[in-house]
Length: 324
Ligand SMILES: [Zn+2]
Image 1 (tube, rainbow, N blue to C red):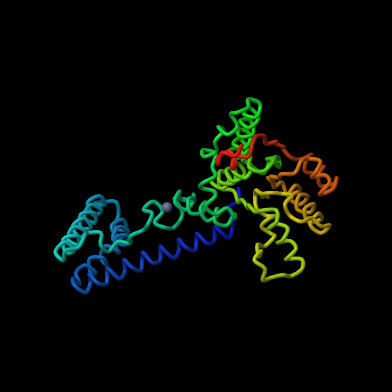
Image 2 (image 1 turned 90 degrees about the horizontal axis):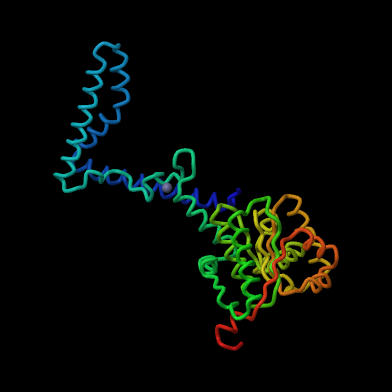
């Protein structure tokens, strides 16, 4: 599993910044208290020497060690109580000078022991979503919000779409570098984009790096890179399309196709296949159309190495407004 390294760096930088700022703010509060009650600072200096006091107690030999350690413990307890009293006298909470971290578990380090803290994983997932090209769609188009009721008018259609739904859900839940490519085929408005997005959301939440883009954007990015249109709005570096764990290409077939884009598509499919990095594509084209548009070499590569799901039914968007 590979988190997007830029997303990881961004979140780690954010964590370092918020941790530093929590510590700085605590130091400012301590300074404020020390001005009002210098005793607090003196108590802190003694407490900070606890380790040394313990070492010293041990260095005096085994005899009477327990009592000496107990004295250190008791002294600390009294000092802490005295410190709290000083703060209370000034009208402050006993923890006023402690850093206030957003996450008490990891103290904003991002690590809970040797593992990533849950809070960090959550932030990383959100950041990966932001970078995946999906934006807020990932919250709206989920498996839970996908309704099979639009396919209920016909038993065969319903059974076909229930199966497609289950295959997609299973694909997302078990996704790994061993997964095959997945191709969703069918006319407009049958839920292909919804299920592609749902897969993306689930796979991202499981910690994989997902890149989601329309075919038009993918090919434009390649062309711009090749022909140096640096200021174009399509500035996504094409490395992302090669490197991410799962690449999702939405609406394959709607982009203008040239020999140039065909050779890039072949290169993309080939390179990802060699590196065991799956691709999910959805398209309105039929298998025959795809063969005509991209040629035998790409078509046989795609059909030979993908799970193919045919979407059936009537356009959901039209059903929603009562046209069909
Ligand atoms: Zn945490």
